[in-house]
Image (cartoon, rainbow, N blue to C red; front, side, top):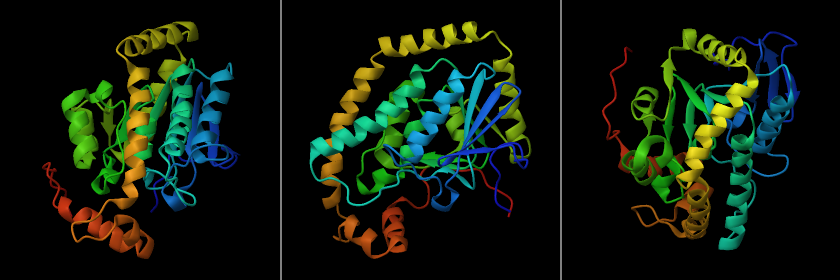
Amino acid sequence: MEDRAMDAHEPGNDEAVGQVLYRKKDGVCTITLNCPERLNAIDHGPGSLHRDMTDAVARANREDDVGCIVVTAEGRAFSSGGFVRGEMPDDPMQWYEFLRVQDEDNERLREMDKPVIGAINGLCYGAGLIMVCNFDFLIAVDTAEFGFIEMRYGDPAAEALAYLVGPQWAKFLAITGELITAQKAKEIGLVLEVFPEATFRDKVQDLGRRIASIPTNAVVMQRRLVNCAMENMGWRNQKNTANALNALLATQAKEHKAPDGRRYLDIRNDSWAEFKKVRDAPFRPPWLERPETDG
């Protein structure tokens, strides 16, 4: 049976707003990425899933009966990464503009008043992981998985990850393309808490309800205090530098080759299944040990 996002959707509870669903309950607004057919892959700019999500968060931020915002997703994935429509640019400046627009929407999340909880209901890769690093709290279901899988074929990855997990783990995730479990994500500080599927939705809603019960001005000031500390540690400068360097790397990515000499781009254009096979072959089995599961 396909996963449902948050506490079972009741008929008429969700308002469709572009490519997201919008629902309010007990002072908590839940915004659900609603493109399960593409595993909620993130595109950017006007009319995109990313923009619809940030616009919905901005709307919830303005509503007096909302004290906390939850972002989750429909289906088995929170986000499989980036979703590219058409040809990607060859010019570094065009890439920089693409990344700047992506980051502009992410910064909108940080500049709002009300806390945002990311309820990670499944795999969370690449652009999806970059996006959720701008949320205030991340709560994961125990089957969730995190990583910058695109780095396996040389596409740029992390930008501000070091602020959340420290430099060593940030380098490991950004350089190796290793995927980590929800429990490992909790151990390194990427995720606040992990829950089994049976209680995951209720625990996220309960945290949101607790935050919403606190006077809003007190929550806003404490959130700004912590964000200000991150700014003082160079958060924005780091992201600007990352956008510039990643624009250069992204321009070169079309020419990156697999171990057999073929361009990853050509393999991907010919066969997505073959592309995944070639991309992932050098990285199996996982380098990090994983707990054994029944069945």
